[in-house]
Length: 265
Image (cartoon, rainbow, N blue to C red):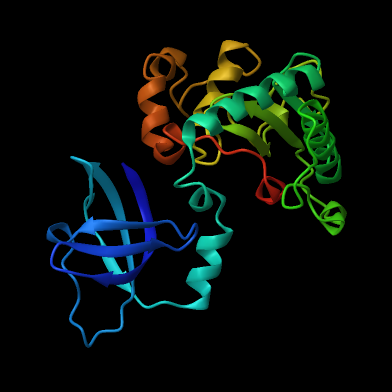
């Protein structure tokens, strides 16, 4: 199954519609029975659809829609790191991610998590790690991985940053929650914090399920209960359901190795 994405319609015959994935230029034939084309007089050369491969043939999966092609669509699709990896060899990506995870542990004193006070600090930390990783595999760092120097000049957030390596996904940067995490390495931990609540980590769609499980299993964040209901068992007994409910895209997210997007908020 390939998640919903945008394709250029390149042609068709009685059996198939030829599609070209905008972000990767990957071409494939989709059974025409599953894709009802718009009238010929409508200039809608882009289709937004999910695909499924069945009996060695591609079919649309669920609803789809047609739209006009624009420079904005092209730029958005090509610059999206998830789209650019839609047709990559996932077994290789998983293997590369696990190797990078081991390198991160070596680089970070055998811990998958690091705490930084400023945006400059976390970008510098991440840059140093990326360079370390590529030295370990005896390769040059690709130009599209490291951030531009001007990116280091932004003010950032006073609440600090967490760099977390999820072995099933890759490098994550989480900001705004340092005050909740009672790790000895986290200088911004505040036991009297009243602005954030642990359960916010579950509600936040940008925080991965792996990170939530990590802070719970390592007992560095306490007090996972709903407001006005201080029974933690309600959250703990239903944790997997809550993670699926509030993080549907993150729950089954594919591995994503580092590129410049990790340095953007």
